[in-house]
Image (tube, rainbow, N blue to C red; front, side):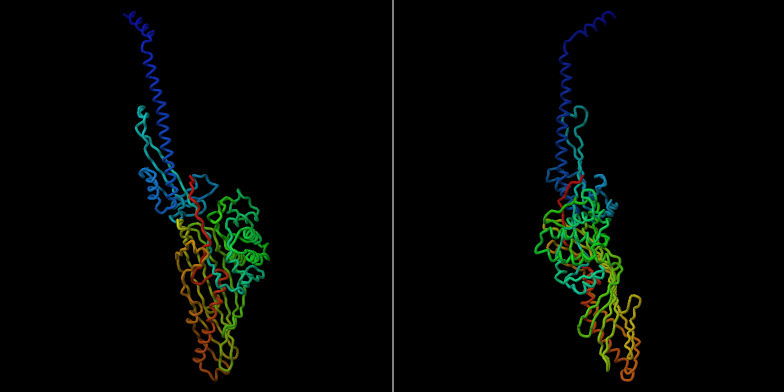
Length: 555
């Protein structure tokens, strides 16, 4: 029996009947495997490419409507005939930081970005869109891999928005004589510009990015390697600022002749060209600080400008920190004979910036000590009284609230906040002024008008309003309100007045004369503060320009 079984197996091994069928089955299995690889994988890759394209489009569209990113992304998927299910659009903050890996440049709400931004909803500038779907399989199911395969796609799009703006600019009522005294004193030189020169500076805007690139060259920095943040830390002189501004001004095309502005700029800053200046006290470059010099560029017609008057006054304030700069003026208006005094700039704070949403600039606190020479008719003898008036003009802040990039044109919204201030009789150390007329009388003069802090107040700038001054409202009429709060006490009559004039009559005459004589002082005070971009109880702002770059995929 064993011998028969052995023989059978030998004959079976030599039998080749049916071998073609076995090979055919193997070939079929191999063909199905190839079909699975080619057809199913090809179908999956095609589905992935189509879904990725739709995801990219959704991210690019959602970042333009970042406040409603989810619904915007869903609409775009629907337009591309993709069901919007299993899709999430997440607003983010994107920092273009070349020192970080691309995937490490995104920050969620509540995080602190690498550029120092504390991320909240107002600072979002990017949207991440993730999409999950199921693609059908055709042959993979024969091998137990299931009927569907999962496809995941994601894309991040960023929308870069810049605005160039200044806080505390009020060129319209500038007095050239006072401006020369104040700016010259802060610069420790003599400035002799006419009102035409000042208006030429106020009307001249230079491209911010071209200016910064030129300034980096003046400071010896290298394009492509050094950053704009390095520029803020570099040793910059007034001459570097002047050279860069003139290079851009004379190399660009303006409406009108830029030669007047160029000459005014050189006249104001050339005498102090070798003086070092802390650029951060003049300009705020927060949104581009980590970008390499020359990496941003500027498209014609889409420039973000700096204003030359702000550049001059900001430089003067940075150099004149803490200096008490003297001035005098012969107003020759009725009984207000003249005004003299000093003006002091507190710690300088940049009041001109290229900024993004959430960035802000501040004007400096300024104190003014006035001595108003007032002609007061007294019985038998007219007299000129020296009346001290002290003004504390608190700092103001302008913050970029939003930069709506809309089809009808770029807009900007600035939020204005003012600090408390005061105008009163007396000096910094005394709230009462003792007035003495030799041989006639002495008296105490007091009174104050406090100005409370206000804001933030949102001020909207449409594209057609770029270059216009807008202000927060202020109901304070400085001198008229001060004279209304005037009190005269401790009147002591001396000499001949004591024999002929009752005290009450003298008090009434003094109050009336002082109130009338000080009325023209409002114009003088406004011009003084105007020179340095300060306004008591209010905030002046200008948007010079804004740029909304096309959304780009950054991941």
